[in-house]
Image 1 (cartoon, one colour):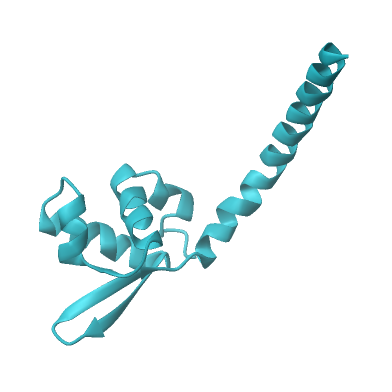
Image 2 (image 1 turned 90 degrees about the horizontal axis):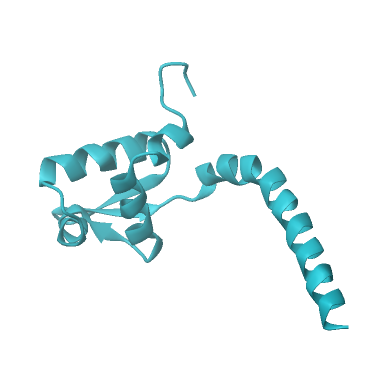
Length: 106
């Protein structure tokens, strides 16, 4: 990634882009189909799709006269890696809570 390109974190900071990814998680959609589920104008959806495509989070294929978009989850690995220590932190705390609750039952 170039220094002037937004990170995956910056791309996903925008709620409508997360909504688009949530819709694409269920399968391929055209821009028109995405529009049916979003409170946005067509140019705005196109702009978000372009940014998601440039970040590698979305792939597009031509199907006759329409473009179909699909999720590419590989770039999300960066976020998964960043979250790993936080998951470990919460796992430790939840394990301690479980031990405490088990002790209260005894």
